[in-house]
Image 1 (cartoon, rainbow over the protein chains, first blue to last red):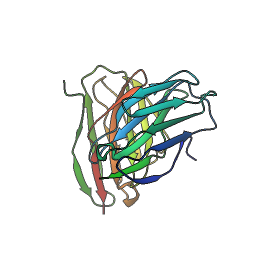
Image 2 (spheres, each protein chain N blue to C red; image 1 turned 120 degrees about the vertical axis):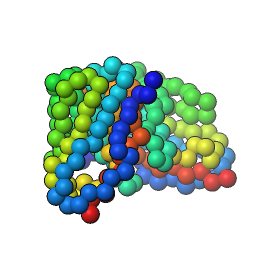
Image 3 (cartoon, rainbow over the protein chains, first blue to last red; image 1 turned 45 degrees about the horizontal axis):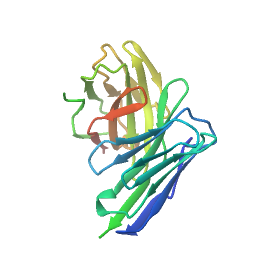
Image 4 (cartoon, rainbow over the protein chains, first blue to last red; image 1 turned 90 degrees about the vertical axis):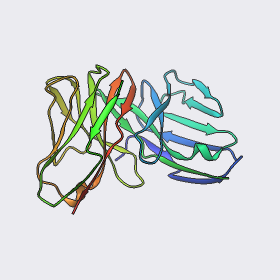
Length: 110
Length: 110
């Protein structure tokens, strides 16, 4: 059983469209992170959200941490082909394990 | 500053063979971990270490051993490879909640 479930699993869209990726858990996290992974590479950290209700923006990417700190979302405005990749949420569970979500594979077509 | 270095990048093993995947980091991070990534999936934690001499099991530890004799190195050993261990393996070191990944080792067991 995955502690962090992401949806959708796959997303294929046209350039210019908006999209939202969700990361859900039944557990409370002190913080959640979002990573992006490109083919043949390891994941790279995009953002860490710490406070319930927090919203962080990174250019066209908006990240939100749920009020109860059990879920998070990633919204991309006007997606571009360069946004293509695997998006992973992650969080630390006791004792000090960093675990990852199931992943959302995004393909943006020109 | 090399970050996290994994070797080899590719490896083919026969069932029953043993091998060690190497991982080294030069960032003086106490926390290191090993993940496996199967097609279309996120990362699953195999083993992790919170410092030299300390290791613990992750989500999928069976068939793998680790040791941590120095802060810099965290090798992963497969004692008797099985086809189910065909995967891409990532090593990561962590500062606070941010993980830094190597480029991965693509392992095929035939």
